[in-house]
Length: 285
Image (cartoon, rainbow, N blue to C red; front, top):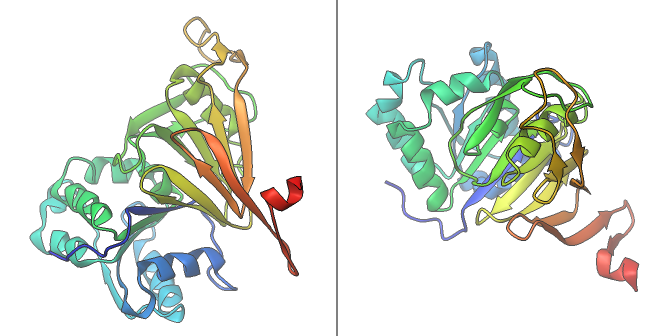
């Protein structure tokens, strides 16, 4: 088993459709967190229906970004998640990357298995655990496994399934703005107001440190939905009806924003311009 990296537990959660052929800003950050040229990255393509293509694509981009030690772990069944060689690869990794696809495949094969336990160990010793799209949703304890898209939250149109539990107290959704998933995330959070909703746009990521503070990277934005003090008719609304939610707090966070999940508040914002960086403190001066 690999020793601790000396780095804090880090998650790198991508909203999907990240740039792989241009500057690849989001994936470049993942490789850097994993150790750059000294990284040992494991690719998990399990969620995808095109696993060979996914492995080839990420192998190409990670190699171009400087990684040289790449391997693949791909359990086809829950029994496969007990494979000693696969567990050993996770135990030596400095970075793990889970692809997009069907998050139900990940939910079936990772949580509560030796491979899932290895992911927790890797996270605890400072290896960066990354995921895009389905690989993003699986990070939390509970994830949206299916649901209708659209702006209006509707009662009982979405479903929660078990995730890996690497990040507690949240529900993560991806392809957020591009697929109009505001309604389904709001309906889930309004029905479980102790959970914070995080919706991540495409080609956008949150870098979560110590399970509590995240910084936004990439081209889009991250929405944080807080319904802890909101009013909702979730217990009474009939199936499919528009849900009443009043008093929810919404945070829209572009690249450069740093957010505290425990206190549910903005910590800092560095606006990124081509010629200058304007901090929140400067803007208020």
